Every structure is written in structure tokens, then in C-alpha cells.
Amino acid sequence: METVNLASINQKPSLKQATLHLNASLGTAVFRMQPHPRPCFTPTLLDDIRVFQSHMTQTIRVDYQTKGHSDWRYIVFASGDEQTFNLGGDLALFVELIEQRDREKLMDYAIACIDGAYGFHSHLGQPVTTIALVEGNAQGGGFEAALSCNVIIAERGTHLGFPEVLFNMFPGMGAYSFLSRRVGTSLAERLIYSGDLYTAETLYDLGVIDILADEGAGDIALSNYIRTAQRRTNALKLLRHVRQNYNSVPYEELLGITTQWVDAALNLRQNEINVMQRLVRAQNKRAAKLAELPQNSLRQAT
Image 1: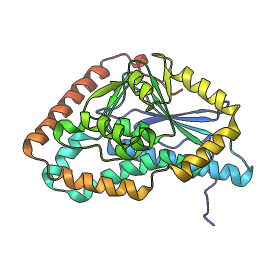
Image 2: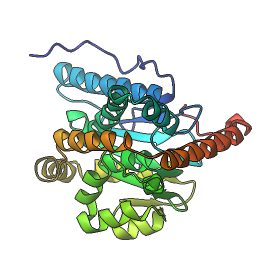
Image 3: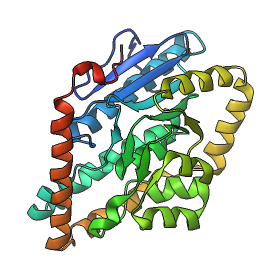
């Protein structure tokens, strides 16, 4: 039997580019991303996700070993930025590794991405529900990360999509797998290969988003969902069982696709790399503007 360290939920893990808010009354652990210098999946943020998922998994296991149950039933993936959920892969790092022809490090990054996505998709291998709370725009890997969760709550007015086709690539960290399970392969391919950004309202109508919240009311929608789910625990348990056994994405599928993504990235032409560099400059400009805003304009996990 695996030995589990007696971790305490009161001893929060050390996170460098994220915060963790614990709400015992609702049984929720809310992980809010705060990456820098750009709102993307930096290697540091990916490591924070790994640490967070490991911490919650250990904590829940200890609860079951010592008490026979756990009060932590909802894992929430959110952002500390009101305007941006996440803009996806670290394009600056992509450019650097592609130019260096460093397949090993690019593969390491891609695997870290799918490890995090698979953790949320498989609800940490525990009897919990993972929820993406999208309170700002989500692009590329940011949208993929939201899709990996069991439930997606998105505020009206947010935009989500896959811009990878702009530099002749595809979202290779789970988009096709997660999206096709939700809406079928035909619609999934249309959404991916259009390169367009879609409103949360449109994606809700298409069945991609589960719950549509009013602008600025994502936290309220989250609380309402959890309170409703608490009254339907048996139905939720059965639904999770069905999804896990009949509609889940195998890790091997994610690994196979992301391996193809890495090989395709290394074959990009210079003009396509130039597009990535322009996107990086745009992200830097946006991050600089955000840094000038008062700190109280950011969502705080307190």
C-alpha cells in the first residue's frame, strides 16, 4: 500500500505564481493563477499546479484514511486576473526552444501541461469535482485547461478560442480530446481550426460551457452550483462514475497527441515563428498595462 504523508489542509503548499483559497463551508479548494511576466502557462505556474494537485490528493487520501470521508469535494481552477483566465502556452519559451532545436525540453514542457490537464480531467483520482471558473479570456492552452475540468463556469462577455492556426499549429495539450468528448468531433474540429475567438454565450449554446454566469458574478455562480450539487450528491457521484468509465480521455491519448505537437513545432518555418514572436510582444504589452493597475483591481484569494 502506498504510504501517504500526514499532510494538513491547514498547511498550504508553497506556491510561487498562484494562490490557494480554502472554503471549508463549501468544501472547495480554489487555485488562482497569477503567472508572470505574461498571463500564460510558465514553467513555474505548471510546477505550482503539480504541487497543488499533489497536495490536495494527499490531503483527501489522509482524510479517508483517518476519518473515512473528506470535506474537500470541489477543486476550482481560476485566475487572479479579472480580464484574463490564461492565454495558453509560453510562446517565448517555445520560440527559444524551437530555435535551439531542443526537443527534450520542449517535450518536458508539453508533458507538464498534459500532466496538469489530466489531473483536473481525472478529478485527481479522488471523489471530487473539478471546476474551471473562467472570469476572463481564455486562449489556446488556457481554453484547453478549462476544458480539462469536469465543469466549466464562464462569465458573459469572456472570449475563448484557439489561435494556434495563426502560426500554422494546433492546440496539442488536450483540446481535441476534451472538446470532442463534449460536443463531438465535427464541431470540435470546426472550433479548433477556425482560429476564431468565441463568446462564452456562443459556447454555452453549443454545449461547450456548462454554466453561464453574469459578468462579474462568477463566484456567485460557483457557490450556487456547489450548493445545488450538495443536495444531489448521489446523482453527482453516478454522473462522475459514468464519465470516468465511458467518456474519459486516456493519458496515453494526450501523450500521443502532444508528441506530434512537439515534432510539428520543431518544423515551423521562420515566418511562422515570427508570428509567435509578435504574439509574445502583444502579451508583454498587455502585462505591462496590467502591472500599472491598482492591486485591488485583481481578484484576491483571501
